Length: 188
Ligand SMILES: [Zn+2]
Image (cartoon, rainbow, N blue to C red; front, side, top):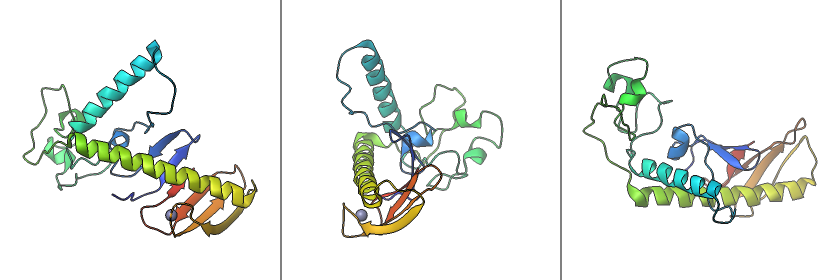
């Protein structure tokens, strides 16, 4: 799987990923990595775990063709708005692509649930991708010694590729991209 557009990093913690393959983001939710070692027990963690589980099950039950309603058509080329009867307020609740309690859902012959394996593979890829980005970012910070308003190229710490980068003069935000397709690529 490949990211088609760069990851967008916010505060180094939550990723807003614009890639089409990440379903949680298709719903406009930030992608959070769940096993960040916050310990176990406690009401807040329990709530977070329940929320994570619900979101996971939701993704499992979402169609493999769904690519977010910021697109006109899904991956099976079904036009979202046409399918639900044209541009009407609330058309998204009628879509069969994602789990819905609405009674107005318009069924789709091409619906195919993602399933657990698919979603687990997505999560693994997201995690690996974040890890590649993190080591790449660290390498850039070391190479530039914290300097701003610079750009350059270093060896990618994750592969044989070249890592190109820009560090913004104004706020120090880093844009990075490895020459290897599917390796690290992000902007902050
Ligand atoms: Zn690389």
